[in-house]
Length: 273
Image (cartoon, rainbow, N blue to C red):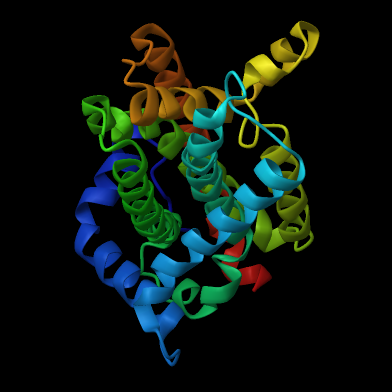
């Protein structure tokens, strides 16, 4: 019987060893998503712009939502502040929603002993990171247009995302393995990510909630990433290093736990499929 390593070192080594394959599969997936469409890759730019306009209209015009004192300036900045939360949640939700079907949609790889199945979540994450990068470019362009400046702390935003990347990979490995045996998990993750969008400070600041609810919102790991993302991209604040280290450590633990689950369960993939 084949034995698959569950060591934390193998989790990183597998990524480095197969980095060229991950890049190739990611490139093929990104290009394949828009193949045959009239605008092609341009859709990766227009999609976030369209969603930004829709959400901003609904929340700032219809619901009269404001970020800050409620003056004219907060109306102008609302779209940018909202967009940061959309980028973070979009990265997380895209990976989680795809994870349960990663093995099911690549059955041909399961039959190939030499294919490293553990890289499939990396491919999904890399594709999501590509689209998040496009959204980030849109965000920075809008910020430069509206406020004529980009904070130097924006350079720290990739570091802010690291704990989320680790935790997302752990969840993706776990769901990819579980999705082979429990086909309903794909429906559940869709509901969970939708619920998380409204239970995370995507459309509102944490301070907008009563004190008794703010405590519960802080339990949501997306809260820290979204709030610190706004601090670095928009408000020019350096992130809380102590809390970032804590979140990063937790993210690594989640990543390794998910990797262990995937390595343990992959032995039965061929039998189930």
